[in-house]
Amino acid sequence: MKTLRVNLIGREYDILIEKNLLAKTGELIRKRLSPNKVFVVTDETVDALYGKTVLDSLCAQGFDTKLVSLPAGEETKCLAELSRLYSEALSFSITRKDMIIALGGGVIGDLTGFLAATLLRGIPFVQIPTTLLAQVDSSVGGKVAIDVPEGKNLVGAFYQPKLVIIDPEVLNTLSDRIFFDGLAEVIKYGLIADKGLFEKLEACDSRSELSEWIDEMVYTCCDIKRAVVEEDELDTGKRMILNFGHTLAHVAEKEYQYKTYTHGQAVAFGMVAISEIGEKLSLMPQGIRERIRNMVLKFNLPDYIELSGDLEKTIALDKKNEGAQLNLVLLSEIGCAKVHKIPLCEFVKQLN
Ligand code: NAD
Ligand code: GLY
Image 1 (cartoon, rainbow, N blue to C red):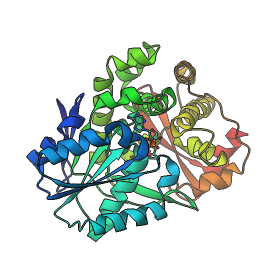
Image 2 (image 1 turned 90 degrees about the vertical axis):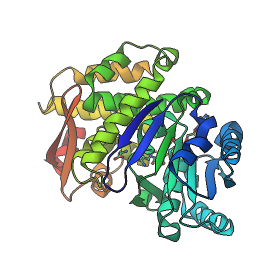
Image 3 (image 1 turned 135 degrees about the horizontal axis):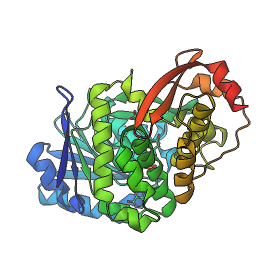
Image 4 (image 1 turned 180 degrees about the horizontal axis):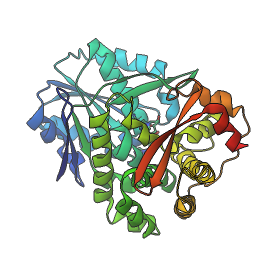
């Protein structure tokens, strides 16, 4: 089993990565933590595939368990479902000595993490991510949130899990659309922090080739995220580099009401578009955009999304920005990110 330790003083935790770990959930928790009750949150798709494996493993260790299964999809990351979870957990008489498990993709991870952060002012929680995006990104780092009508992830907290259990075997049941969606974030990690990872992705042509080294891929990405989060847990500096390609991705997702494009598809486009601007402004070496473009097209991700809304207004509303200044994440080379401040109006001019 591969293990990474996230060293945040007082909030340290392990990330465990190995195929078929799901069936060992109970013993992995028993070894490290001592809850009486375990409240599991999942979605209906993941429940049908993996709910029983996790529950059986918890029951085998004598935990008193309750599982709540929510509809799959982004709409579930909302106040109404959160409210339902508060009631379900309280009717299970959960206490701060117990534990909550998020079993699913980023939607379940974010929602359940926010439940854990706020119920009884904080209950320990474990992330068991089941999408590629959740395994390489959302389950690590403690960003938890729900969506509100005004926007995505606008109500949230930083609340680190006590443990992250990653079983790459579960990725085999993902549709191609969801698998390659997560791969966009893997490509991003290569671009911002690991040239070797990017080149290894360049050498692969299919999902089956990628699957041959999936454990290593997940480990490498989690290790990059671990290092960034250790340096900047609360997202005031270095963590910004994880946002490479995300400025325009957020605009695209919003313009198409989070329906037409997945987050990863929007990020793929965003990485190509921002590199084009970076190269045009001579802030990035020439040729990187073309390599990113070839990569995203190879993995069925879009290199272009038509944007027509009020870009300046949408970008200005992004919670990462500081007023009229935009923090542009660019690459000084493949494997090395940098942040460049640019006036928002100047950036928008480049888009037109
Ligand atoms: P998701 O959780 O909606 O999962 C996508 C789909 O895959 C769902 O239909 C789900 O039921 C299905 N699924 C999950 N695991 C499966 C499996 N093993 N086999 C078959 N189907 C499976 O979406 P996601 O892409 O995982 O996460 C997106 C969410 O993550 C967004 O809400 C985004 O805001 C959030 N996010 C959070 C962070 C963070 O740092 N907290 C980072 C990135 C994204
Ligand atoms: N997904 C970006 C972050 O965790 O900061």
